[in-house]
Length: 423
Image (cartoon, rainbow, N blue to C red; front, side, top):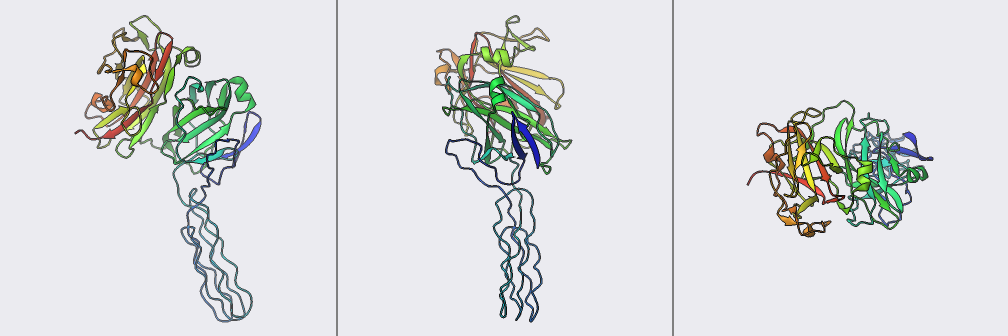
């Protein structure tokens, strides 16, 4: 267990070990325990006049079978096996054997673990069953930006931070992509003063597998409003990064929703794009960015929508720029922009307009959150297929998505990607 400090409050932080203590969230969500899933071992065999032998360890948390004790002496139930980290807590071991002469034998120790999905388990934070709470999509919700997330090693602390802006921020929300629990940690006094949440209290369990996975970070305020989620790509160790398995993953959130508001905070926290400009000379503010390693496998489509089910429209104010890298971490081989006809994104490197595969067809007012305009800012769900832009022979690649704004007010819906086959 690694003991860390968050703004003066000591947190013992592990990944995937015992249950998490409550951390001050009062939203009524249920804290859960995630210890093991291994039955205890069977009790020892019966023996006349002697103690029973200890039973062999089992493989899950079911109590071991009792052995029958011999006359005059008690038998001892078998001890359960220790399992992998995760799962549900073991409550007991095997029952002691029946004794015909003296006292009954003691129960064996229960098993201690079973495997589970990779979750962040933070002692001092509340572990909550279910998916992270939805973004509030109101201007009063906290704004978040400038997520920094460095690579790390199994058993080591994370290194990174995110900036936030709000009148009454309260707590940090964290979830590993694909996990069935999320975590809520109070913002420290130093976090609140700096308006920056430090991520060092999140420490990986030594058994955390190497590779890469998406992690979602958001901020909730005292009123219960939840910010957009920033999507970080966490790289652990030197293991092979298989990327997002499009065929195995039903849907994945790539960008969190940002309600329409002044982009001055994003200009300060994220800055202006150094790679793209408006019509060759105007500044573009970075509202949100995500970079993901994609593995199409046998799937032939990777379509975008405003929700996980693929039923809501999506859109942004003003443009979404998508960059394609054939090799993870390599050079950009191609770029596309999805913008209305009210301005063009230019590449600073080439001084050429970035191609627009599809223009928006829906008014901004129908989006969630809406763009307060009658102009076209939205796309029908599943109308944009990112896989169709990629060379057919390339099944493993990296994409970057940037929501860029000009004009001082920007927004975006959630952006989800859904894999499948061509009709």
